[in-house]
Image 1 (tube, rainbow, N blue to C red):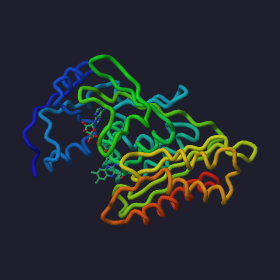
Image 2 (cartoon, rainbow, N blue to C red):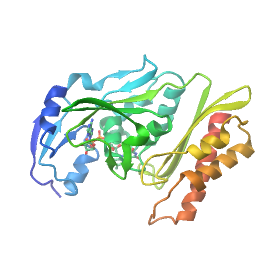
Image 3 (cartoon, protein in one colour):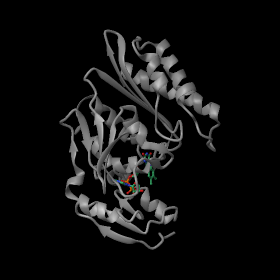
Image 4 (cartoon, helix red, strand yellow):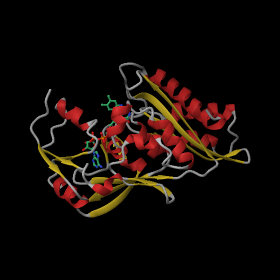
Length: 285
Ligand SMILES: Cc1cc2nc3c(=O)[nH]c(=O)nc-3n(C[C@H](O)[C@H](O)[C@H](O)COP(=O)(O)OP(=O)(O)OC[C@H]3O[C@@H](n4cnc5c(N)ncnc54)[C@H](O)[C@@H]3O)c2cc1C
């Protein structure tokens, strides 16, 4: 199918993007990998698109401060390189290969994925697990929203229609942090049926910080606080890994009805994936 008729404007600055968004019925065109598909299905019928691909500074990726700062035109594939140092870079490199396939990774953007807020998408889960922040620009100025407050449901966020998602900030992880990522999906290029991300810092044999995130285990990206609490101050041994996985599956997850899996199966699979992600962090690999 072809999209419903729409107007198109190519912006060259943040001000031009915000001027276009002011009517409340204009949508940002970033990589177009989700939006154009929805328009072709006529699930989305924006009156106008504002194309941000010509705004020069939007492809900024700054790894120098305490947090990695990602602009609206940084494509998924940028995170497959060693541009981000340390454990955060390790985690992003692990995760990116699970997003769709190479042509989509070459066009789709990290911030587009956050704005789209698919419950099974990987980046929203990473930013939620790590306690990152979303930076919004709008007619009244700028504001920052914690990731856990940004994703409000399937395909819905705290972003207002007249706001641009201008930057994502992901805190760098201490050198002693080890990371893991495990995903279950139907085909190589499809969205995750379920996924788990883990970043664990162990000092003197005890967990001093555990960050665990779940994808598609609820109606939005989820931070597994109960699982993290199980690990806090404990050795990362098999017993505590199993207990954390159980807490994630029983307390943190809120699986939604799916055509391919009943709720109990989903809880079981969440436990398996959390266990795998934690063991990967502990044992490497
Ligand atoms: C076959 C297929 C498989 C896929 N598999 C996966 C997968 O496994 N994992 C995964 O995470 N994703 C997957 N995707 C989605 C892909 O990652 C998209 O690239 C991503 O969801 C959206 O990024 P985009 O830059 O293409 O955004 P667009 O499609 O341009 O925009 C998506 C939405 O976000 C809004 N938006 C975009 N950027 C901004 C901004 N800066 N500020 C405000 N609003 C904005 C748009 O207006 C639109 O509503 C898949 C897509 C396809 C077609």
